[in-house]
Length: 497
Image 1 (cartoon, rainbow, N blue to C red):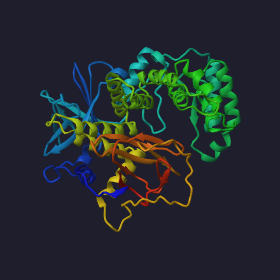
Image 2: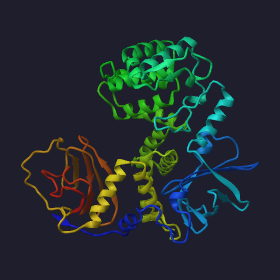
Image 3: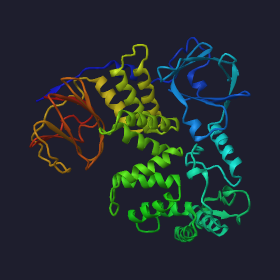
């Protein structure tokens, strides 16, 4: 039996009322939250302090030496508020007391009892400090930028040392890069890898230089001479089918060759295919975990998140492993991996339900992490928020309520999963659906996450279960031999007795 359910949680109201940016203390403070968003750095003889104020959360780092992957991973987070000329940092860890910083009219912040001056800096300032430390060890290193212009705090190779290569291999790689991007080759002048090519601003001239066939040819020659980045690029060519026919088995072979030489991005890419499996690529969970661990230890945000999710959600994980998984998610969020913030929302929301620490508001932190995930563009977070909005609206004239429909005339696409009277199977038809499933009789949440197409989820249930979902038109519910779709076309909540 399906029943309609319209409860509005305080969490929903708090979230929706907090979406307006810069709502806090506007009447009392000349400086708004929007004015303060940015990166701040200050140093004395013993300490370098970095505060990053994002719209909804802050990140705090202390460095007594150079910025390294390990010291960056020790960063802290929480939410921040302003009150007049004071800025308060409220830390997510219950044993870390909040700190109040003085706000100066010139845009600086005064930190700690010694009033260390924190001045605004660019978003890549910490990244450049990290790269400077690496350059002291190896003068040939150059800063690597992501496609979004951010310098990641990540070692690109095991031990931070790139495998040796010949000048010929480097020149071949850069010739390939020239043909791939439409750049002029500067002849291998001694100015680091970034000085080898120069992008041509004239679009038509640049387009005339692009030749993926020649790029592939030179990447292959450089790979045969041991140049690792060329191996990675060849893998990407086979992965997406650029110039060559799409072939995941060849892509994985090149990823593996580069990964086994310690290339961090190749380790992350290889682990993904090993964990999920693909055509011509048998699944190998143990192998995936090995490569994820290696990439995560070098600061790769995606690997940290994937490993963290695996450890924290695996029912066979020990408490120590689950705690380790949460830590990997945490340090992935420090690197602004969007999905990591959504996982932190789930983690802190669960802690709020289970906590016996009344003085620590886990829900407040959960909400900030959710808002930050949305701000960074996480799709699951956006779907979850849309579900909250629909449930809060909850009016009769909207198609939020659900009535069972056991007589669907159109068949569903996913294959039927085995189910009995004590289980429920949920399937996604035509697109992913984010759901939360709660056992009604004891309030235990038995699942929260996305259901993907062709990947049904079967859960054991004992008594009634409550399901909150984002897309009713996509959700398929199977009970024993019966299968139905909810009648709601959007987000709603149902109870299955």
